[in-house]
Structures are given as C-alpha cells and as structure tokens.
Image (cartoon, rainbow, N blue to C red):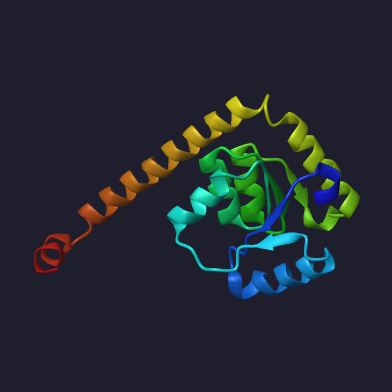
Length: 158
C-alpha cells in the first residue's frame, strides 16, 4: 500500500501489548521502510500525531475516534462490531476483516485517498455530530450522578 500510494507509513500501536509485536513484524517484512511509534504517548499527543496524518487505516476504535476528531480521512478494518458501528456513524469507509486482501485494501485506500478533498465537509459534519453526541452523553451522566441517592453526602465528604 505504501508503494501504491507513494507515501510514508507510520504504524501506531494503539494497544501496544497486542500491536507492537505485529508492528515490528510488518516493518521487518517491509524492509524497514515503515516507522513505528513505539514510545507511549498521552491522548493529547496522540491526537496531535493523528491530526498530522494525511490518511489513517485502523482496526482500532481509538484510532478511528482520533481520526474523526481530527477530521483525517480514515479507513476502518472492521474486526469487531464496535469498529464497524463507529466507522458507519463517522462516515468512514470500512473493509470487513473476513473480506480483507492486499488488493482489496489497496483499492479501498486509493478510493479514500482520491475522495479525501471532496469529503472534507462530510468529515467535518460527522465530527460535529459525534462531538455533540458525546457532550449529550456527559450531560446525561451528570444528571444521573447528581440524582443518585447519597450523592450529597459523598460529595461533601470527598
């Protein structure tokens, strides 16, 4: 895919304990032409890294969330229903892992790459809607916590 799109590849292990071994193996198979983010960084730094990408391909939900927040074109590799559900809601194209092949991945990445400029407004609107939904969820949580019995005591003694 790197050769097909003519770009640089940064492997980001969102779950290092599971992803880092695979990242090193992929880099080795690619002749070392991949860069691996192998140092832990905090969420704010991760958002900064993702926001500087031209495109993200991810099977990890958090990668897709960061891409949506940063309005970066993203391709979801849907191995889990939560990944597929988020990608659909965020307007991110997805490839089901059962259907995954090198050629299919390259085609999907090319399609995303070619449509990135004209889909910028859709990414912006999806990010706004997801942000509003997150704020709404926090407001609901706040009301539930405030209304739960004994909250006043816990709050005063905490």
